[in-house]
Image (cartoon, rainbow, N blue to C red; front, side, top):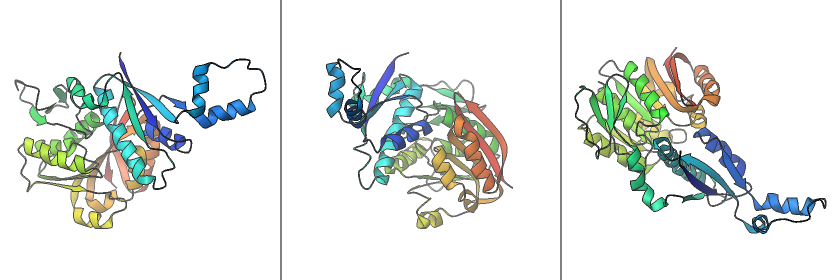
Length: 322
């Protein structure tokens, strides 16, 4: 397998929070380069080192960074999008700038070419029993009578290729019976909310903290011939924005939330306020190591597990209000 190397520039103070955040989006291996660590080593070495290679001496003045390796396939393409969004969120949280510049450089593939290069990995994909997810540039003959969900993700997460999205769509197919109102929190490309309508839901509201994601979701809704009377999208953070929560309203039958563990835990006490009694919550974007932690928080907030699913280190869970 080929790999894409991404070097993320941070600071000594930012290393721990960056590495923890990388784990949450499924990046489990990284190499850390920190000038402060190396300078401390030089100051405290006990004389057993007669020679230090010049390349290592260059670490004295290096910019602190965390390097990760992403597979050169569809999963890696989705992970790169997640990485971009993660660094943007971290910059917004780091008002003092103590975590460094939080930018990355790619080797093996020029970053400016990535927008087109990643398209080679996005092929028509059958999901569940009913859907076929495809980008606009791929043809599909429709011979198996599946419902076509056309998604152009642009810079937003959600093509169906990543296990978090695929697992969520499969659970959503089981949850939709017809006529539901869906709330999609962390909508990305809009794939879940649009998929819900194509499966039989009546209307959907999509929310994301990224303006580009909201615009992309609306564009994808139009691509799938969904009326804007049935599809609404808002930009903002429901955790901190009470006005946004009021605008979204309540009375939903299904919530989908394909985000990351820490955000799901932070949202856990808010989910019930958007739902009707006995309604459904589908959460995803959870690495399996943190599944029990997330589920425990949501159960404590008044839900019970109906079904869960796992694939390649990721988990999705369907719950209902007790």
